[in-house]
Amino acid sequence: MPVPEDLMYSADHKWVRLTDGGIAAIGVTDYAQRAFGDIIFVNLCMAGAKIDLGDLIGDVESVTAVSDLVSPVDGFVLKVNADALESPEMINQKPYDAWLVEVGPVSDFSALMDADAYAALIDAQ
Image 1: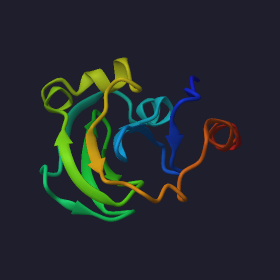
Image 2: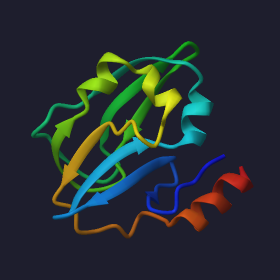
Image 3: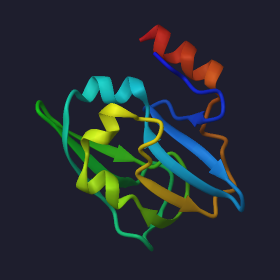
């Protein structure tokens, strides 16, 4: 299962890609999309929303269940990925390209882990 080295990860299987200016693109990991199964619908919060670590940013519906998506960071939702809303299957096809929301400015990444720590987490599960 791929775990890209250039990302940070949450214990609940979100990835975070940091960009210039403290902006964080957030998506679900390959491990998570496999656990979800075929994703058929994505619901995301609105741009402009203030979120804190652990707040709901949306949910994904698969053929078997609906799963909540919680934020791995604090900040404001700057962008929502309209492509993921229109074509949720892209999350299954390319989970590390299918970001869901961009949040910023983010200054505290202490709740996240690096790729090695995340790989150890999923190996233990």
